[in-house]
Length: 222
Image (cartoon, rainbow, N blue to C red; front, side, top):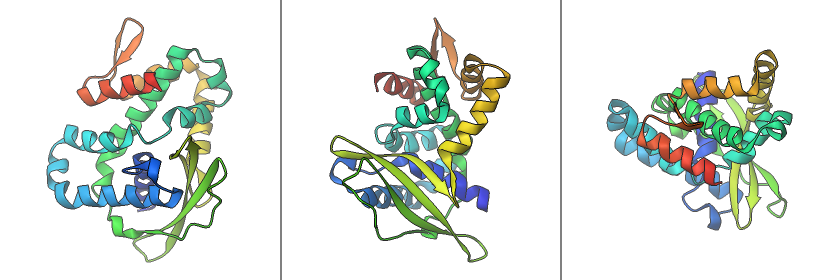
């Protein structure tokens, strides 16, 4: 159950709000949960039977509202600064698609009413802020989940989630740092592209489905 919670809140991290430009930090999380709840309540059977529809359901909400470029730069750390523009775009798209494909189905197993969004106590005038939530486990205990958002002009975008003190950015950053040391950044990107089902064409990464192709284009334009 704990692993399932990690998967689900990581997906919520990327979903964002229906209208982040008009929403405060807490509203972004509240609306993300609302969008997920509505979709799962009305389409759970359809989404369970159609993998591409599930990917599309999540991607339609996710792509424009999560600061993927900022998150990717933090995950790669010093390796981001050494990467060329093509590698950066490929990493953003491949990392995103890998997570989507790996964890999307787990969303169908989660009950959204387990999430309680706590009153916002942060400072919305700062560039980054946290929104705190509690998630109820099967045994009745609660775990703390903090979402971290960054302000981009007049909108809030999510880029990190911390579960019981463990940061999503830090965890992936540690894993990728070790893998890059053992191989190389290019090898890691290719491994992610392979995991996501990418097809290499003339030095660029394309995806096998329409959803994936749109994701690559969006990443390249950020």
